[in-house]
Amino acid sequence: MTLSPNYNDQRDWTIVQISDTHLMDQDDLEFVHMNPEQSFHAVMQQIQQQYPHIDAIVHTGDLAQVPVQETYARYLAFMQHFGTPFYQIPGNHDNIDHFPFYQNQNQVHAIHFGKWSIVLLNSAVRGKVDGWIEQEQLQQLDQILSKFQQQFVIVACHHHPFDMKSKWIDQHKLKNTENLTDLLAKYHNVKAVICGHVHQDSLNEWRNIQFFSTPSTCVQFKPLSDDFALDEEAPGFRVLHLQANGELKTKIYRAENVQQKINNEISGY
Ligand SMILES: [Zn+2]
Image (cartoon, rainbow, N blue to C red; front, side):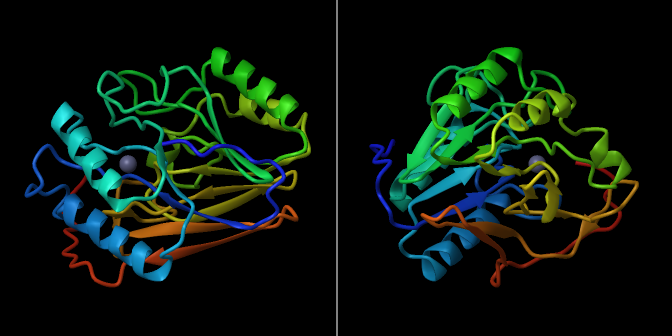
């Protein structure tokens, strides 16, 4: 689904970011003692109740924990039925052979909402947990930023560009952050970079650009932990209010109706 761009549209837009659904190949299976299908659906239900008129949903990766065709088909069927335009970028757990890209994996995709544009990057590298944005994509991002200098821009990728001060997570961050930030520094219209991967909410500010991470729709990772640890926070999502004057307002919501039984014995995922 694509929206036809109307750059002069002066209205405000509401976009929801979801991330790290980690869906299994069957909907009754658990992932780290939580059923990711149920928590994903609970989050989506809450989005619908709280924000019945959102303009789009952006999923920042790790759609699948079991990255086979059935998992993606179930995700797509659910999202199509949900009825809001939706977009997704792959995470390290996704299989790019089955991933529902809009174009090929190194094709940067820009979606436009009036005065705002969201640019979708693929930072997932086959066979690796950490991230890298290919030169080919950086060049396309450069062209997009140069072409749309009158637009306010949000860049989305799966991996976190800046340290979370959590040793195990930071091993798996975006490894060529400098290539990205060097490019972003050339322009004045990039308002935010959004990512997933870290299963927690965070904000880093760098040269007037806000870097946000967003909770997973299933299990959460404990902030500031050197070793793998789960957090008792509920699954969540991020709402982004894009205002025609370039102001960005954002808020995290947590699911109110998800059963959790965090098992602290778990040492990885
Ligand atoms: Zn994840």
